Image (tube, rainbow, N blue to C red):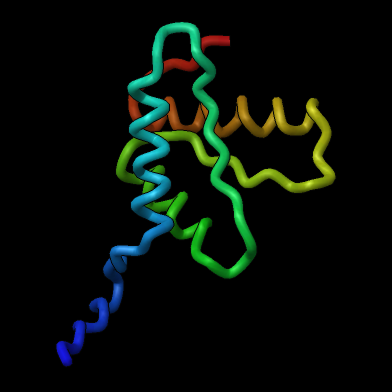
Length: 97
C-alpha cells in the first residue's frame, strides 16, 4: 500500500472541489459572446467551498460573492458591484456599470 504525503502547512491540497471550481471558471471564460458570465458553486457546509473560492479568486482574478439565502435582489446587486469594483481595482481594470 502506498501512503500519500500530507499537504505541507500553508499549501493547497489538490481537492476535487478546487478542480471543479477552476473548471467552472474556465468554462465561463470560454463562453460564447452574449452568454451570461455568472457561475454558481454551491453545496453542503464544511466541504471547503470558501477555501476553493478564495484560491480561485487569487489565481484568476474572478469575483467571489458569498450569497445568503435571505438576500433580496437589491442586496445581491450591491454586493456584486462592490466586489466587482474591488476585484477590478486589484487587477488594474475599471468596472463598467
